[in-house]
Image (cartoon, rainbow, N blue to C red; front, side, top):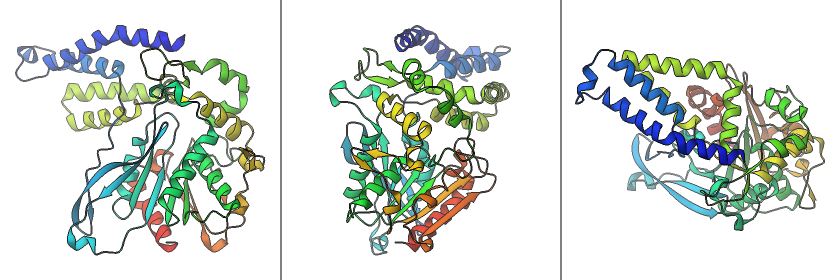
Amino acid sequence: MLYQLHEMQRAMLNPMTAFAAAGAQMFSSPGSPLSYMPFANRMAAGYELFYRINKDYEKPAFDIHSTVVDDVEVPVLEKVELAKPFCRLLHFERYFTKRLAKRPADPKVLLVAPLSGHHATLLRDTARQLIVAHDVYITDWSDARMVPVCEGPFHLDDYIAYVQEFIRHLGPDVHVISVCQPTVPVLAAISLMASHDDPKLPRTMTMMGGPIDTSKSPTEVNHLATTKPFSWFENNVIYKVPANFPGYLRDVYPGFLQHAGFVAMNPDRHMNSHYDFYLQLVRGDEQDAAFHRKFYDEYNAVLDMPAEYYLDTIRTVFQERALASGTWVVKGEKVVPADIRTVALFTIEGELDDISGSGQTEAAHGLCSGVPKAMKQHFTAPECGHYGIFSGSRWRKVIYPKIHDFVRKHA
């Protein structure tokens, strides 16, 4: 019922939100007489702030249209490589000039994005940097409210099967990079492939800021998942999709609840950010205001997660620690990371990560005991938080060069 009430509230607010958007324009546009009234800048700022707090945030675009390779700008086309009910495998295909076409082929990279509330576009900066010197594919997970019930449920085991299908499709020369949540199912997927001596095992697996072993330096996220019984999550965060979406009656963990949880982790920071945005608009500081808009266009765009997948993750990853404890069974087969012997491993953590604590990702090295020491590498990024691992200046200047070198070393 909560989801239906949320949609009713959203429908009621839509006219006021539209009015606020128009008001912001009327009090700021040079062509409007109202913009020359006293306090017009404050009126415009107030209207825009109301508009941005209450508007619907659609899935952003990756907006990657070109890159620079060997000092030459080349166009990039976003293509759908594979389409599944719960995910699209996208390819950022670069179109080289005749001169660049003769250069050696760049390593093929599968970038596995999180299915944890935000869209895969959260890794826009990650992909944009990688495509400079790599042939990049990315998992673009679907918003569960847009997937009809007839497509069936989507469990954590299905996530693993998707990852395996994508790896096999891209061939044995692919390098897998997983960011945050997918480190666990990606390690499981590759472990199961290794147990079967799959000829299409990837060359390398790079795992960034993920909860491989949540007993290491537990964070607030870990605390929430382990202090409440499993039944609490079933009864308090799972709702059916309303009738105005294609996924009508599908059980999901709604995006608006996830967003409320994100904000609740740092409410003061978000309140201060919105107040600063108001002041920036009043002062006419358009550059800082544009940065605020860009950040919250991404941050506020959330998706619904399939209930089965979310609950499986709570139980398997956080409450049972099935991967770290060696008890994980996927469709009748035990997950044994020690069976991996030919896939190089690189783990990356942020020194200030408050989502995946210190040592949680590095724990993969102990589990992957069959990988030779010469094929293992770990890096803790100094003064780097969770998002800084894959986005921003530290990602581009500190972390990406290490991934670049690691991939080429084992290519």
